[in-house]
Image (tube, rainbow, N blue to C red; front, side, top):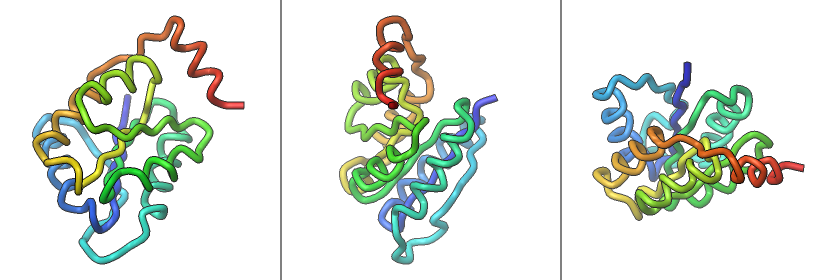
Length: 143
């Protein structure tokens, strides 16, 4: 069974709540790694929690939210089995799954509305990896 881990920093708190609500309404269980309020905090702390959750179990997927999504993406991609992608469109979400087998979607709360975030997450979670010629390329990412 696939589990979804989610985390944010203070800037991403409201968007994270909107995503959690969307997933819950659609019957998707989420493990919320924080932050649990809008108090200032450090995004790497929360990105690492989801990255470890995904890194240690390849069936898990993750969602990370900060102001831009950039810091979360950079931090998560430090983990060997993580392919975190910053998405600004449904196309980004779709292709990151189909061709890269991305397992964490990163979103910016200052660049993405809740409506778009729900769309991106839905596309990301419901698009399968194509494999084939793309598997060879994904395998080349890690040393």
